[in-house]
Length: 129
Image (spheres, rainbow, N blue to C red):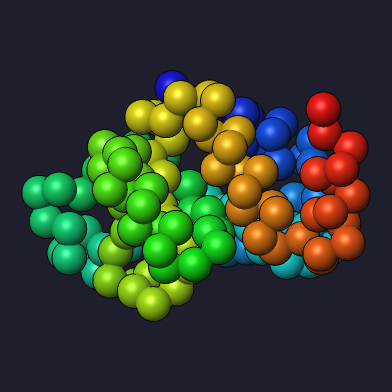
């Protein structure tokens, strides 16, 4: 089970990343570009999901494209999901209480790579073992 402390630690370990708050919710940005954020379900989300609406903390994460979002959801619908609010938008919702820490790290790094400037992302990848 992952926590907001895990999200914060993993996100802030990435180059040129900062944390900010909007409407009382935490967001992590790379050069002012949002890549992961705290995203509780709203009334419209709960209505759309019905009995399938998960409880617990929800992380929003950018993905490369709709196909990547669909692949994550197909791979593990107990962790990854979406709502009509995100239709047509390259982002996936993540149940923090259901995701393994190593998978969370992959999600956060991939979200960062999608939003980081190309040169910064390349430098980061080149420096990895």
